[in-house]
Length: 174
Image (cartoon, rainbow, N blue to C red):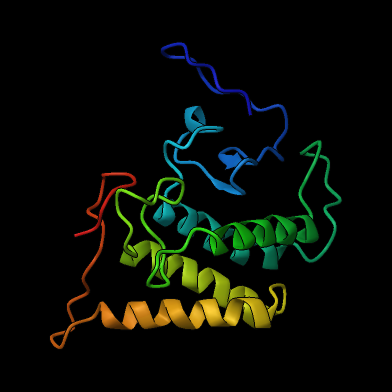
């Protein structure tokens, strides 16, 4: 992916295989192309959306691609490798209560779990454990602790608390 900072510039791709917002230094996705390589916006909810979608998309990659539309394609195993990298990165970014902060690269301003990001990341890890591409003995305790956080976020009336407001990017949930 080539990002052109000039106003009105249209991004161009070197290949359809480009991982776009993937940041190798974190093993997670950034919020915007210009933040790759920085600690500006490694957003839990955004990573949750991307990782859940990619985990689901990997199911469609059973057969090798035989078309000629793209010069390169990602295989199911390459996708699983990327997902395992992200899962490993998430292990070190948890909050003390066992969830994930809204800002994965800068947890100190909001050192408590954000509910929507924690829910998405928990679903992602659970899927990996259940499908066998994540190690059960490593990730199941993480999933169970995160589920405990999520269960405590629903009050007696069914109201879910601790969700970051929409349209704010990484920040503290309310």
